[in-house]
Length: 482
Ligand code: SF4
Ligand code: SF4
Image (cartoon, helix red, strand yellow):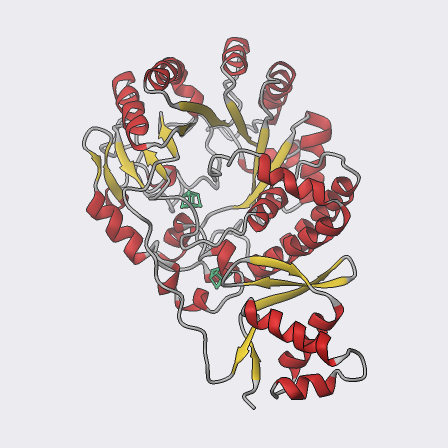
């Protein structure tokens, strides 16, 4: 009889039982006792169906074992030796792909000089001081960008403002929102607005405008004073915490129409995740906090090295346990990294590309050049057209052709690929000098974190399944701007 062999899956335990994450379909299954036992026998020994039935004969009757084998074969968790599954087809997205999110870099200038910033350090892609791009976007270019977005989008469009420091160009941001809202209504589309800011320039009339216009706000902030002031400094070196903290409190007090989130950049010197989270939610009042490791070349002293990734994973896990304890009791918890990954798991996301960059998400430079995302805006090497001439479809097709997961050798055999798909292009560019390389320096961290989120998903599927079903009802969120 032909031997049964395991196929591609990741087995994990949660809520006292086994779960299976099936890699080709990105589906999660809770296993009953006979199915768990069959899977273990097939994984740990060699033999055909009869052998499995015989091995498990003292625990389960034959019909239950054969039924479990049939189910595992049907979902392709196991297969027959010498009958490998066909290679998954290398499917490229149907073109033209609708533009979901446009990130408008309304300025490439900043009033802070954060020492780790990719715009200013040796890692920068675009010369914002002496380059050919204007320092500020004009109202005309912003309007042309809106027309471009509304032409390329489906029924719903997301417009995100970014910098530099976005609020340095508040006048253009303000008129663009009014214009975009009017044009979207004329064209029968919905449009939604958000921005990222360092909070230094928030003042009452800006806060009022953001609240009245339901603009989603993400604040870049690194935590309590001692951590914020390590890197997030003004040009003269003074820390920014005392400037931003009262402004953030005022924003949170007045702007209640949408949840306000904090976005934290982690470095090897500031890996105090629980303390940062507590300060930002309990002392300042943020609804959500998301963390991302700094993007930098490995030789920077603040880069997160291998031991740092281990430490970061331990801390992420501790905060994720806190998240689970809250959610099981239907209490809010704002650790957005875990919530975002749970949503992707629940929706069965399986990515051919790591993010929407170059596809459903595009960045626009101050002069109107269209690029992969906001981090590449203004880079000639990553240009995909202009807002006036439209998307350069050949350049876009060539980018998608070169970056498909099927061509990333290490990722093709990795169980975490449905959610990771090789990781951020910008990080790869900074680390390896090319967007085509997967970010192999953080695979252990990605797999460890994905395993943690799967376990939380398994726990919630048993202990509070209602929490997960709300992902079915929520509108697909705008792609995260990192
Ligand atoms: S980058 Fe690493 S973790 Fe991510 S899919 Fe590729 S091999 Fe897996
Ligand atoms: S993950 Fe990286 S490449 Fe993708 S949108 Fe974010 S910064 Fe750009």
